[in-house]
Length: 98
Image (cartoon, rainbow, N blue to C red; front, top):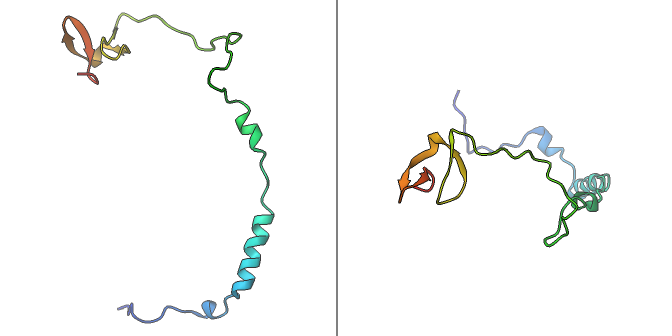
């Protein structure tokens, strides 16, 4: 069946739509029922630059470099041997820095 896209697409539901004023009042009612969230709670855990962290302890376990890892002499990151691109001036270089 062919569809004529130039014909108006109004249905019976469109004719019985609410007025603009009713739609606006419904929108205002919905926004009034929204729950207010205290933004201070979300910001409470953030640290400011220059904050005193002398009493803080590391919660991450740091492992020494493993036998199958190397330190890139360009970015100074520890990579797996599979990321070794070659050597530059006798120093190992990773694929990202190559």
